[in-house]
Image (cartoon, rainbow over all chains, first blue to last red; front, side):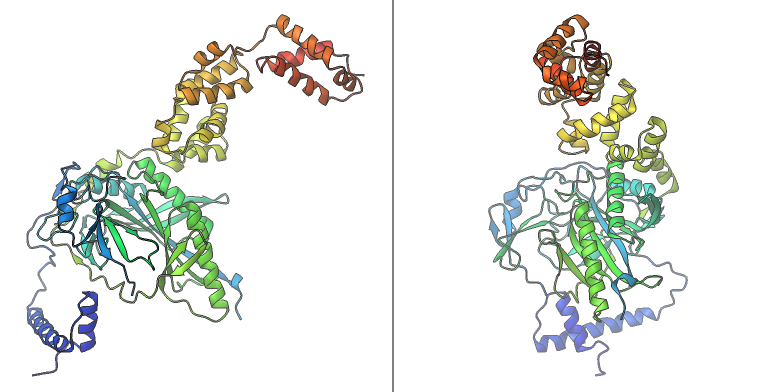
Length: 99
Length: 486
């Protein structure tokens, strides 16, 4: 198999951005999987799109808006039921460690 | 070796304003400040999988109004984008913001510093959502855990980015002040910096005077007052000057302003922080702004602070200082004009509003003015009572304080407390006679040519009448009875 276009360092970078702690074998596997995706994108790139407007959305729609009206919220207890940990009415999270 | 004075500041401000909508940017949760923790959320603003955000029309219109007031070009098409980063105050791990296609670009705001009018360019105005609020146990460094309140998550935020046209810390503070006044006039933000409705980051770099290149910029966060903006900007400029003149280089970084200790602190290396991997938000279709929509909003723009200030000078003949102070908030300017309509002596009204009213009020904003127990009409009536001689100016200040405390009108207080000015020459003449008789020393001084003793004697008469005597009449009566000057 050819050497993947994506480097190990790039895999590590993307993993860190996604807060994923990958083992060495996982990094290797990701490298080949990401490479497969990039190769597929390359295939799309070969299509002639000169006359095609860039699109960001699949449906031709604009200006979908709502009026500024207040609607009922989720009760606090229900909201906190989804939290891994709580303290009073707050969601409790582990201390923040800056990089 | 270069000297510090050879370098000039290059400053740009990023201002975040919470919009005064009733509901959040993409869901119907209320935006009210101060609710019980996590009582104003729903699956959308909690970022649950599979939810569908929908744009708040009023938030878009508020941002458009702001863009128009700042002379920006409103883009005919704009899109929202996802900005990715991880922080516990943002559960879906991306913030819906705008990136390549913001709502508006290329505007300007005029400021006046040291008598000079200067235009500060506006780079962009865009919409995004606010994040939740973190509460730490102790300090960030020592906390074992953080507590999160998501009530603020999803509140509409407007970001206004200036061009790096600001050249001094003072200009930075004046710009921020002028921008705040505009937002308040437009009714799009309450401008409350303590509650965090208005926040400011400053970008500072320095460069050799005369150079047109930009130096390495440092972003300083956490500025929640005009004073902080000015001090932090000044500190950061000085820090960079010292670093460069001693041969060091400036590192592009984010620093935090420690207001209590007056210095900036590096927020540790953020080498990955700027890798936000923006991409178009697939859940929100683009916005298309028809010219008609913008034109219609333009017709609803109020008179803005600078225009109003100039009009106050030309129409009412006020000094620039008064006009500036009175137009800082729309509510105060409205109050002033309402009072002047009832009592058409602009400078007298201005003096009372600036010295008496602003001393009592806790602020000059909408909330403070609307809570004023003295409506403009009552202030006007009080001033009319001074003018027609019913009460003296001195008594009027006491009456003002009583009006403020009780909410009663001036006439009621004056009548009940018997404060009507004594302007009857007969009644006052008796008091004047007593005062002259019991202060022979002052009379002797007067004879010796000491003119100040007249003031003393007037004071004694005022005291004897509990301030109710008409001062002009007292003066006249005393001069009649005192020996003529030698």
